[in-house]
Length: 285
Image (cartoon, rainbow, N blue to C red; front, top):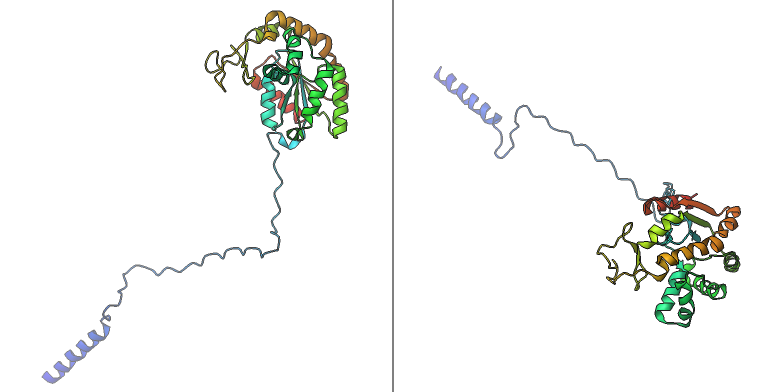
């Protein structure tokens, strides 16, 4: 009997020894399932060299600056003090075309003391127009320069019908055309009020207004710090003479360009930004 009991205990010990885990083997925790490995999606194969991408090329969106309209030749007309200089700066920077102002060309010549400057100085001081035989060759020379090939913004030229006809002949010779004539309309009473407060920089030609567009520091140019001045042609007595000259000689340009479908009228008795918005909108039509 004792022998049978000893044999049974020996068998039980052998059974436990077989069931014991091996040394170093990881023991399973109850309640956890083995997660299945998820395969990552295969990356799209790159197109072979020389084979075009099958995806269609997206169409270009409209250039909101309007530079897609280039080449673009624009003429700004309106009475003196209508805000042409302010709008010219905005248009020139937006479309990246040079601003051709005969007034600026003449004032630069006066400052430099050239023969041209000596000839035009008394005319500008009296509010009179510079003769065509002086003005037209200067403009033609400017249009032949490389930066004018993508377009030009005209400000102060042409002022008369003969100048407009001369510009047409020049453009025909160059294989170009005038795209739009923007007329900024402002009553005479508002012009006198505007010009009496206008101040100019004698060094770089920047124009300010003591109320509508004041410099950051009173009496000083924002760009170069030069003392601002009132130009002789902005004096009240000169302003009226300039308005009379405009009415007699430049206003007929309206009747000249309107039948050609080039004229766009803009109300100039608003803020500069509102005026520019109207001009920009008209140029994109």
